[in-house]
Each structure stands twice: as structure tokens, then as C-alpha cells.
Image 1: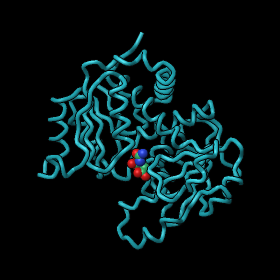
Image 2 (image 1 turned 60 degrees about the vertical axis):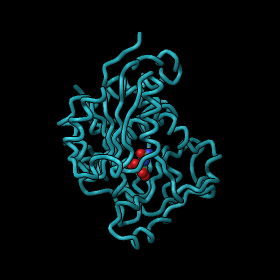
Image 3 (image 1 turned 120 degrees about the horizontal axis):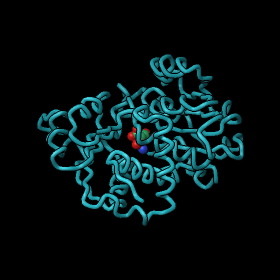
Image 4 (image 1 turned 30 degrees about the vertical axis):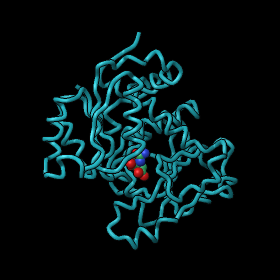
Length: 306
Ligand code: NCD
């Protein structure tokens, strides 16, 4: 039985297969409409979510399956003190596959050990968010036709942003990838990512605080939200929250084929005036999230369509 805890749980070849499946799903929706008939997906969300939970639900419904779940810690037995391990054991009796989001780093690993069904990490604290990464990979692959030889700018909260951590882990496996890491000094990528992932793979990267200085060289600009809920004090957050605002003036500095991604939700870091720019790909990215989750559910349940 397979789980998805980190993007590295799939090899580059397996990821390519998954992306190809997602692209076929995009083109032939009806072909996949009954692949999960009779199957159930449980969504356990102990932290707020709109896109991830609903895109999982939409994915399962589009495959003909059904969904059940909890959308907050306070409305589940977690509020009574039940452990993640017990919740997962129990949920394994009620469904065929489970996606869980939890505020604690490492909770996904613990849960997967106890799961009697395929387990998907839908975000564990500031650690990893592998299904967002699959979404990001599908978006980049669809827009650029490749995942190789490009310069990716990651901008915003690189310390607490789990989408950034997962994306770096995944992208260093492709040849010719360079990163420009743009953040306030206080929100730089954690040392374990710089040393164990970037340096360990001999990846070329620069760290900057100024977004304008990077714009002209980027093929992809991945904007992120300052992660308010992970700050220890509100003052620090308020000082950082409007550090970056991508607007039409800054877009003028970018190349014609520099695509803007964002895992969403956006707060102030991308001005709404950018939404009409053809290079703004973040809503398209949310749509890709459904196709890639459909492909993931099929892969983990070992289901195929002729
Ligand atoms: C991200 C997350 O939850 O980490 N959102 C998402 O899943 N699309 C990004 C964020 O919350 O900033």
C-alpha cells in the first residue's frame, strides 16, 4: 500500500506518469467519470482549508466516488483529545483513501504508519504539502512544456511556507533548475532546506530581499502569503505582511513568458490588477489541482482506465 507524505515518495518517472495521467484527465473528463464508483475518500482537515479540501472532494466526485470528512479540529473528536493515530485507524474502517491536513509537522508521518488505507498528506504544519507540489508541477509542465532548465523565483514567506519547502524538494531532481529565493531576512528558507536539499544537490541559487532585482531573470515566479498563523507574535507579522506586493509596474520588468504562480489564498502579495495579465496563472493552477488529485487518487488506489 502506498502513501503520499512527501513529494519524494514518488520517483521522477512516477511523477511524470502522474502528470501525463492528469493531462489525459483534463482532455477526456468523461472517460474517468466512473473509475471510483463505490469508493470513498475521507478528508480530515484539522486546519483551515478551502482549495485543498474542496479540490480533493471535487476530484473524488469527478471520478464517480463519494466523500466524507471533517473540516475543523473543533468539530471532531480531536477536540476530545483523540490522537491522530486513533483517528486514522478508525477512519480506515470507513473509507478507501484518506487526505489529512494537520497543524503539527510530522503528523502525516505518524498517521501514515497507522493508516490501513492509502494516506495523503494535505499539509502538515510548516513542513510539507506534496499535493500542492504536484499541482505546481502540473502547472509548470503544462505552461512550459518541461520541468527542466529554468529559473524559479520563490517569493514571500520561505521560512514557514510548506508549499515552498515541498516544491524545492521536488524541483531539485530536474536538470538545469536554478532558484532565486526572495524573502525578508527573517523569513529565509530554513537551514535544513538550504543545506540538506539545495547544497546537497549542488543547486545554483541566490537569496535576495528585493523582488524587482530578480524579475527580469525568472521563468516562473512563485508568490506566497506571509503565514500569519505560524508567527509567534502578531507585531512581527504586521511588520512583514505587506513586504511584497506584485503589481503591474513590477510585471513590466518580467519576461513575456514569466508565469506567476501562487498556491492561494492570496492576501496582499499580488495586486488584483495583475489577475488580467496573461502571465497570471494562479487560478488556472487551482484548476490543475483537481486534475492532479484525480490522477493521484487513481494511482494510490491502483485504478486504471482502458
Ligand atoms: C497553502 C497551504 O495551505 O499551505 N494553501 C493551499 O493549500 N493552497 C498556502 C497557504 O496557505 O498560504
